[in-house]
Image (cartoon, rainbow, N blue to C red):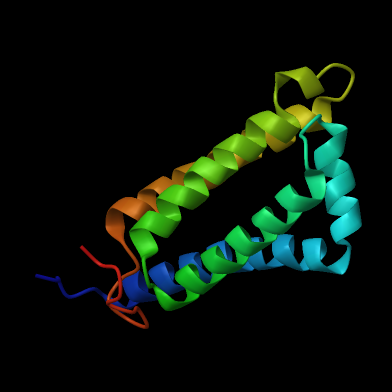
Length: 137
């Protein structure tokens, strides 16, 4: 049973979904513009098969954009995105990167604010407007 939302709540949910989608869309756009650079960045932190992982990241981010825009499989997508963001925080901006670069600590912390939003979204869902019923529990 869905509750009726005030117009500002509907707008806030839709804006939040657009922000999530836009963030992942920018990330995937940079990957597609230079997949080699993304692979190089992945290799620089020591992961094997960097080009394969870059393509996996691009595919995942594309699917997340679709889920956030449509609302389809929204809760699982938000949880997967949360795990992905947490992984990125530690793998690319974690404590081993802080020595001599305070900006990395800032990047690390910023991932947690994004993580909090994704977890909140996973609990509350995509809202009732412009949201596919596909994948809803």
